[in-house]
Length: 504
Image 1 (cartoon, one colour):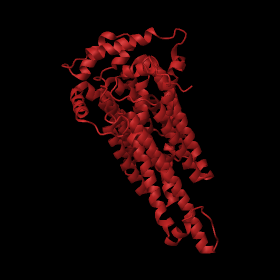
Image 2 (tube, helix red, strand yellow):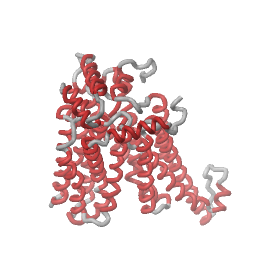
Image 3 (tube, one colour):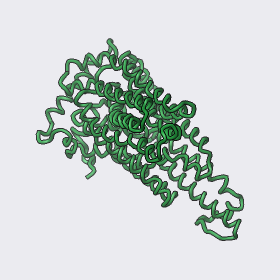
Image 4 (cartoon, one colour):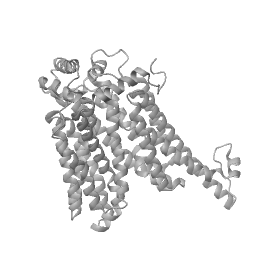
């Protein structure tokens, strides 16, 4: 079977096909469209990474209290939830490209409000507008890329674009150590200012054009994306015919947003929600926002930890981009989830070792006796392995977690979610998926400190359990979408689903 090896090596024919696809899509409209999405993802990363290096300087310059700055930092999430609520309807109503105009204008206004604001209220407004933009574009970007890219490059193009988010976070964090916070806000606006002229030249999604009844424009757009010498007649016909098929089989009693909750969409909706929520519920925000605390509590230098995890996550993301259209989405998801599970488990073990180190120290100082529930404790105590092994294991565990996340669970949930929904419910599905990731992100971020106070080891065992359940879910229910057109994927879910493809 094709899935016997999780990361099977590509054969010569697949490599030749991939190179051919790359050559075919090297047209100016596609390159401009891809650059636009990548700059948008980079801008997303800049927004996320802005508050960490600027907290002390903003609070000092504007004489802000902890509560004032906390509102400035957290209001982004409020805007993100609002953006998630309107993203589906907006992209369906005005189109993908016009929505990009809206999101970029919001971000530019937000950055300049922060850069030139004299009071905290203007900074809050700017951050809120940026949150709305992020809430819309976090789903819009993957959807637009999947709708314009050819089937054999769809995963790689989406992954490479999403990789720009991590680059943006790292770049702004690094610049924040040497650049004043107002100047940093101006620098953050540069990616969006670069996008604005590109928006005049990028094509609209051919699938959205078919959805709104502009069938005659579909083939022309595909020709501009694939090259004037390409034969796009079959692809254009498949898009138009499947869109008409979806319209003909619509339930007359279901309209708008609630159409998504019909029984035939249960499996795909469940897959999208679980995959997108899984990184958050598996501890991503806990690791991201509290990495410094994790390293400090286990004796690792925060600077060494941050640099190491940033590099390893970038390497994982690049490797995932190379493999996603070779080994497939499902295989990379499974490998990524297994790695995140092992990372969480190793972090939990490092906290156990740290506790045993503390017990060992107390025993040496006061002559008390503690039982760490390990048969090898006495031997390790004599060799002082707790002190040397705990920081190393903590660093390795976090690096394994972020490398695995970058490999698959970073970009792939959004890629799969943008592939599996037909055009008539894609907007509603985007709203639901965005809300799920926003809420799950907030839940983990809010409760993480309380969980650490309850039990550091128990917290990461809980995250490991979530990742293990996600691995089982993916292995049982998530299909492979590599190499299939979007219409073929939709037919797999909705036209003739297999008997065991329901969660009920």
